[in-house]
Amino acid sequence: MLTQVFFNPVLGGNVVVYQHLFWFYSHPAVYIMVLPAFGLVSEILPVHSRKPLFGYTTMVFSIMGIVVLGLVVWAHHMFTSGTPPWMRLFFTIATSFIAVPTGIKFFNWVATLWGGKISINSAILFSCGFIINFVFGGITGVALAQVPFDIHVHDTYFVVAHFHYIVYGGTVFIIFSSIYHWFPKVTGKMLGEKLGILHFAITFIGFNLCFAPQHWLGLNGMPRRVAEYDPQFQFVNQISTIGALLMAISTIPFLINIFLSIRSGKNSGDNPWNALTPEWLTSSPPPVENWEGEAPLVEEPYGYGNSFTTKNKKI
Image (cartoon, rainbow, N blue to C red; front, side):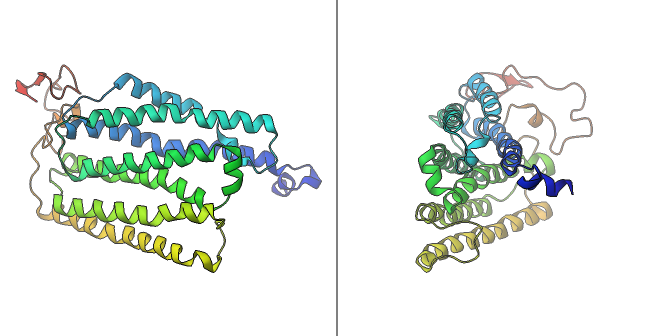
């Protein structure tokens, strides 16, 4: 009965207030998914480019900025819900401003790679794929923050494409990168690089083939959450479907790689990446208490390319 009253304006309910409540939670939930990816890629890139993380302090403050701004952007989902002009203006500005700390992070990641001794392996490839995808998703996010454009593509496949470039192109790519990076730590075995690179190539091509065309579909008015669509969109939808199938197929070499590595993979040694962060300064897999005796210390956990040492060994 309470639910019926809440949604029924005749009985005093207000559906728009519920929308505010829903998006006040649901938009920050996207950042809850992607913020850990920011931290993970910031840990992976220095190891495989052999350079300190560029702008560590600005990277941390950018994350804090996104956390704060992420709480004041929810109503950009409601530009077509009768929001007054002052509210549209405020949330347009707030949403546009969130591109600033995100842009700082992108610059820092690229600057970390710039001039580094980059190892071409599965972990770095998925991290670089994340940067490419996330930048594209961020650009479309800034576009969606603008009221006239948002009204035009609201509830179309443009929004679907933008969302997946952030959540899958961002978060899932870094999950894969993290698995390739930390799998030796957990299991003591190395994942095969040939299968890993194949996994990346099929995933990256399939992902972009699936979701990039959906921007065009949305711009041309194809609505989401509709079972049937105009026949003029058939060819582009078929391209998108092929991309989705490639993404599904890409999990096959990944699962094979996991199985073969656990069964008969090459032993990784304690620190196959010559990393400086604490988790790599113990055995792989680690003992119950993480270290035998006192934990080893380094002068600088991101001191790649410098003369910092640990256990009398130059990294």
